[in-house]
Length: 140
Image 1 (cartoon, rainbow, N blue to C red):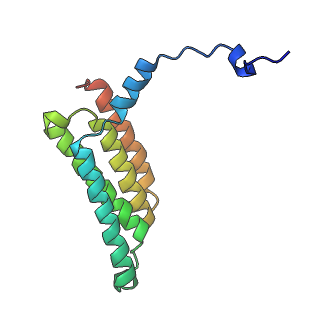
Image 2 (cartoon, rainbow, N blue to C red):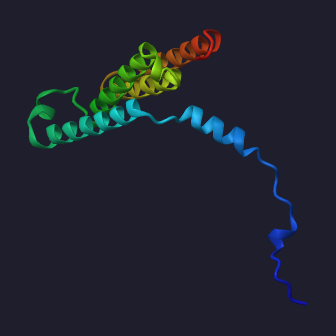
Image 3 (cartoon, helix red, strand yellow):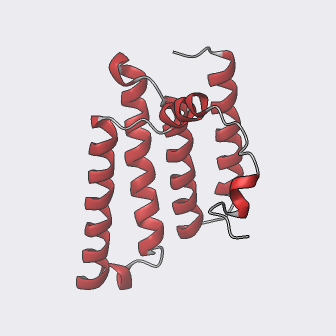
């Protein structure tokens, strides 16, 4: 006998609390004007690095020049400046810890690319400090 039901319809779907899941997602990845400015600045920085890398003699003149490393350093600095603004301006204070961690990760990737990989140890320490401060310092 042929039925309209597929074998998938026979098994109940697990109950998922979509309200909690979407609330967590929104809390971690809130997008506001500061995020838009940060993304625009990072993209402009990336374009500047590509233009400098391809049209000037700067990469040949400096042994430390690595386009990806310089890009990550700039993106990390832009993100860290954004996290400082988040700490200073109450309107944007929501997810400062995540932006501080993300900025530190980007900065350490860049510094590890153009210099010593010992910057990755700093990355681990910085992430641990931010987690401890955000945990014991209370949430906004």
